[in-house]
Structures are given as structure tokens and as C-alpha cells.
Amino acid sequence: MQQIKSIFLPRVNDENPYIKQLISHLEQLDIQVELPSASSSRTFFFPEVVLHKKADIIHLQWLHPFFINSNKVVNLLKLLIFILQLIVLKIIGKKIVWTVHNLKNHENQYIILDRIYSTVVAQLANAIITHCKAAKEEVAQEFSIKNKDKIFVVPHGNYIECYKNNIEKTIARESLGLKDSSLIFLFLGTIRPYKGVFELIDKFNQIYSDNSDQIQLVIAGKVYNDSQEITDILREKIANYPRIKFFPGFVPDDEIQVYMNASDVVIFPYRDILTSGAVVLAMSFGRACIAPRKGCIGEVLDDEGAFLYQIDEENGLIKAMNSAVEKHHQLLSMGQHNFELAQQYNWKYIGKLTADVYGYCL
Image (cartoon, rainbow, N blue to C red):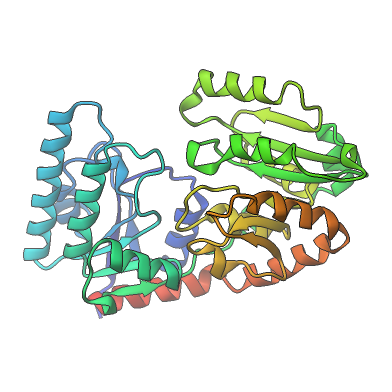
């Protein structure tokens, strides 16, 4: 049988462990995976797919890089070129697979264009991958997909062994200037509007505890697009709250373990979410979690390892944080439970499921 060749479009961050692990484990199954040149992958990808890479599968990951442009005319032209290329690729027998990480781009930019791209791809795709059953149902409904059989559930792979994880809690806390006896809540990652960081700060300062000075919140991450305005607002917002520590800037891979292992529970105060690799990251480090019961989060996490709340519940986040304070002696075992859950999502398994989707298409 001829070797299957897949090309991932568009080219994004090559160091993204999700992409690296998926490619590595597909190649172990004798599937050749190609990455396009950055310049061609977001506009004229047809020549590279057909002539240079000679791919059988066009595997679309994130769609927003195709249309994030300030010029409306350019965006419209890119849309027409994008649709035309996909149609021609289908006519000549190429198969299209789309992994739906989000229903729309996180910044809600060019929403009409986003919707058109997603709807077109949903209809043209030979197969669609979602990371859980709830996402499958949402995608089918959102993009009016009548043939649900072409939507496959392939869980998000874990990050166990993707990052260093050998620093002890005491040393991690010392390096961050945190008290060894404190209960540490952590928000880690790029600070973007949909992640609800400002709301988290407000809610955290409403937590009641007899030992409130022993409860700290750590916020670590880069503000999206390096917005100085948002950074200044964030600094001003926490200036009068000594229980909150802000570590601005991109967190390098080898420092992720410092923040994770210094924390007791990782918080995800998202306003809206479909899939979260960050939740899987926290589970991979054996941390208890606080998160909304929304999208894939409610399937990946359970009540044994997390304090889950309804995303539209007014005091849901506060109640979850207070529960974590009350049950602080259980947080270690909850984190271990999450680690055991994360082990299920090993990349060998994820690679096999993805290869099966390719096989269905061909």
C-alpha cells in the first residue's frame, strides 16, 4: 500500500507541542506529515500541496490565520482564493480533514469572515475532528452538518514528558517568592479577554477565609499582542492586593514546571470555551483544577479532580474557589487523580485515532 502523505495547514508555531507530538506519532504509523513554507500556507497553498508535497490529505488545524488582515478587500480576495483552492483540491481527489479547536477565533475578530470560512470548510471536509462528544454536537449544530458520521472524536493529547517536571514544590515557591505554607491558586498562559483574568481578580478578592493572608493568586503569562494598555490596567487592578502576584511576559517551556509545581490548584475562569489544551497541561502536572463545566472541560475533568461550575452561574467561580479552600487537604490527591486521567490521552493512542480518520477518508 502506498504511504499516506498529509500536509498540515496553515503553518503555525512549529514548537507547539500539540503539533510536534501529533506529527511524531503519525510518522511512527508510517504516515508522512509535511509542513508548508510559512509564506505559502496562508494564501496560495495549492501548488505546494499538489506539486511540491504531493499530499493525499490536507489537514486544516486553525482557520483564523487565513483571514486575519486589516484590509477588507484583501480578506475578501483571500476568502475567494481559499474556497477555490479547496474545491479544486477536492475535484482532483485530495481529502480534507479539519480539526476544530474552537468554534470561532478567541479575539472575535472578523466574525462574519470566520463564520464563512468555518461553514465552507465544514461542508467541504471529508472528515472533521473534535476533541470530545460535546464538541462534536456543538460543531454539528453550529455549522449545520447533517452527516454526523464524518465527525470523529479524537481527544486532546496530554503533555506528560513534553516539559521538564523535576522541581520540588518548596524550591519552586522559593524561586517565585511565595510562602511555603500558603494555598496557591494559579492562572498560567496568554492573557486574553475570553479567559476572564480581570473577573478572576475581582472574584479572588471576595474569597472568605479565616486565614485569607495565607491564600495567594499567581498570574503568569504574556498579555496578548503585548498590549501595554491591558498590562497597565492589570498592574493597576492588583496594586492594592498583596495576595496577588503578577509575573508578566512569555513563560518559557522550562519554566512552566516552576509555576505548576508551586501551585495547589490551577484556575481556568473562561467566559467561553470549546477545547482547552491548558486544562490538559495542568492535569499532566498533577494539579487540581477549577473550571467551568463547558465544552470538553466537562468531559476531561470530573468532580474527583476538579471544582467545576456552570459558566453562566453568577457566583460559580467564587463558590468553586471557596470549595478549594475548604478542601485544601484533598488538593494533592485530586491532582493525582487528574494525572491518572491525563495518562489515558497518550499520543500513541491519539496518533492511531487520527490515522483511522485518514483511513476513513481514503
